[in-house]
Image (cartoon, rainbow, N blue to C red; front, side, top):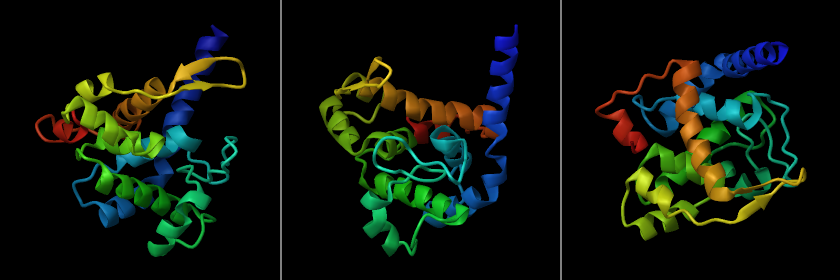
Amino acid sequence: MRVILLLLISNLLFGWSCKWTAPYYQRYALAYFDWTYPYQTFMAQGAMESHCRKSAISNDGHRSKGIGQVTWKWWKHYLTREHIKDLNTIDRQIQAQVAVNRYFYDRIKCKKLNFMFRAYNGGLLINKEIKRAKSCDVNLVELYCKRKTVHFSNGTSRNACDINIKYARDILKYAIKWYGYRPNKNWEYGLWGY
């Protein structure tokens, strides 16, 4: 019973922990996309990446930093052009997260939010998967995913496709569950690719 209670409490805290970031995400969703963009998806992404902790630093060896877990050494040139000098403030971390998403959105072959988030998580391999599928249908593209197996320090392994596909699906799920995102079934689900 205690385990169930702890899981319930941690789930609620995890979900609500990013509510305070809404004004930042609204501002940068508008600046990098437009007023119709569902900023709640970025909040869900921040929750998944770091629980919206400004001080979060990844343990993957690349020193990804902050709320969006942006890797400065990879993104410095691009982010500097976006007038982001560092990732030391919450404002810059969130701007960097949204700017990197925009970078991927501009480079994916099919303009679907699912593919943008998959690119953020796993790079532009998504374009090869779209090309192999010869389609922009999310479910079909998922079938054409071919990526390496990731081995974790605890001895477990997972296919990178499973990780990447779940990442994008979870962003949509958590944006709806925790942050009040209510997609318009006729338009926005098409934007997501479902």
